[in-house]
Image 1 (spheres, rainbow, N blue to C red):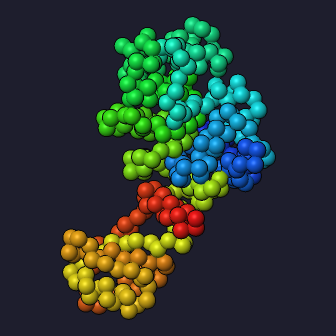
Image 2: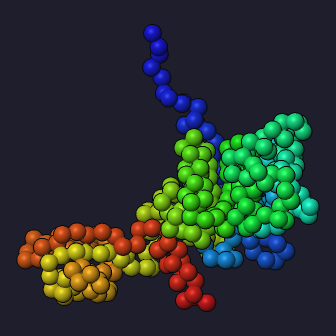
Image 3: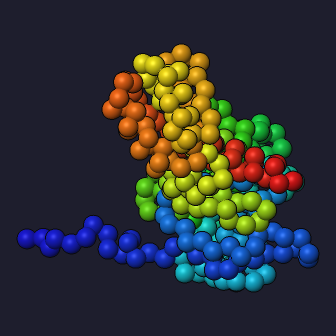
Length: 324
């Protein structure tokens, strides 16, 4: 007879990634300011314009830099113990630069040696990771002769070679063809499904949106919002929510919604049978829409038109542009 017990009671108690009032300054230049975050396992998308603090946040996560003030803990570890960080964290940087003269194999194996592995262990893991990246035939060639896509894959091979629990990825899809991007995203999903942590910063938001569990929005070094994507969207109150409504009389519906006072904009959709409306109060809007649906307009479907990372990112950019 077997005992009935939780599938993985230890997993539910695993330490998370925690920022407690973390700030980082480079002299008088702000990197990030007063960051408070608790990041759970899964895939987290890090979103913000250039200069928003994304790279600083990732460098803090990987122990490459230390906070100016505040406390950071990754799986219970302090970044002031870098050797342990390197064993538990993998980092794929956005920078397309490599030590001169190294082969792909040397690039991966040399990094693994920094984690405390023996030369033999580092070599074996390097070969396996490079093979998974589809670069086995190019492992002993100099990286200088690689294509951009191959250079990106060797960086990813280095990041995951030691089987880290935390994977930090800065623009990981750069230079990859569509098939390679799909395979890479699937690999990240598998990684996250094992209860690990994947932090992705990328401009290819429509692809990451398909796999991300959470999003962190950064602006000028501060966290604007964080959480599940649709929850974050509701936090940006200054920006109207866009809703697409398909109905039998779109012009009449647009007119009545304006009369209700619950929309700030309404326009016909190019399909001719829908309207795209904007509202600042979703709850009151839906109540008004329900009343209209009970009258003489047949509403076939109602769906948010901007409940994704790309739209939230666009709002963030627009807000920054208007304030500058």
